[in-house]
Amino acid sequence: MELSNLLSKTEFAHEELAFLLSLKGEERQALWKKAAEVKNAVVGSNVYFRGLVEFSNICSKDCLYCGIRKSNEKVVRYKATDDEILDSCRFAWENRFGSVVLQSGELSSPAFVKRVDNLLKKIKQLSNNELGITLSCGEQTLETYRRWFESGAHRYLLRIEASNRELYYKIHPDTPAHSFEKRVEALQFLRETGYQVGTGVMIGLPFQTLDDLAGDLLFFKKMDIDMCGMGPYIEHEHTPLFAHRYFLQTKQERFELALNMIAALRLLMPDINIAAATALEAIDPNGRKKALKVGANIIMPNLTPCDYRKEYFLYEDKPVLLENSVESLNELKSNIIDVGFEIGKGEWGDSKHFRHRKNKP
Ligand code: 5AD
Image (cartoon, rainbow, N blue to C red; front, side, top):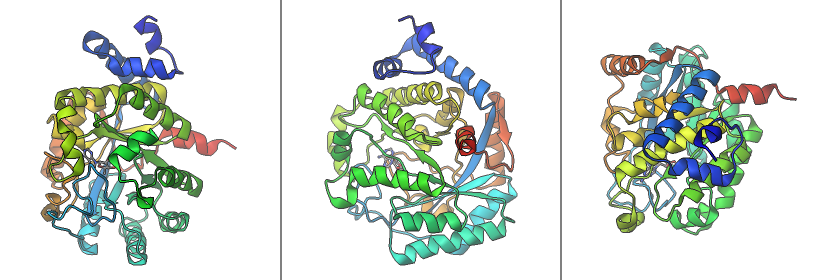
């Protein structure tokens, strides 16, 4: 099939997606250009800001790729105080971010559940109920998801990481705590509770093929997700997956493949929100801007209190972005405006997809 015909389709078969992901050179430029057009036509030129607060790196999971996995004894564990977290949220509100993302390692103790619950209420209070709140705190019970929803969270990010079950178990230990089925079930619980649901995968993992990635895109479609965040996999020395580093694509190849994934997803699901992931900037200092140009429409400036940033070290070269000062924020904004976008101000910036599905009977 002619590439130009393929690019104007709205439904894609598995092989067609794998083909799009394989594109290089001029053909890849054509894919990126088409994705930019679809994005502008469907979700417009607004870029929405979410202030990211990585409030604790204490984690009960042992994911084989992740720098803050439980067994990594080299990590200095931290828990930001309520005041520190609320200060970051206040900064987001005062600077007219529509919403914040509270992210942490995965814990499910009653104390943790209660703490998050309290924080949600306090963030709502300090912002006159204006700040939207996204949580990214891993797998929880349906009851916990409901409790947090009632206390004010309205979006949830839980990456599937790899939607092919076999690949999932190559990057996670095969234990009940890391069950693939439980993760898929958690995504269903979130949807059932009423959250806007976001998921995503890492791109360029050892053992991963283009077929796996095409399958990931179809998984997003089947799950009818509202939001997606995907970035390149980047090896971390103190993790078991580091042993497979010799089989990886170059970082530049993983970066470009990540842009192809974003562009292909924009064609497949034109009305969802797609984040320009921080991991892109571990490879290219303009990584997020490049992602915005090929279909992404969300950016998550890092508002984690400065002292903790270096301890939320998920992967090598994770940028310690200092985006919680008015100066650096203005610089980021003008960079985004320079490439032709507008900044969504003080709006939640819900995905159009969510609005449409909510209006359905
Ligand atoms: N490389 C890239 N992304 C990673 N994450 C965790 N470890 C890595 C890594 N080594 C991502 C996971 C997780 C998100 C918070 O960070 O996809 O969902």
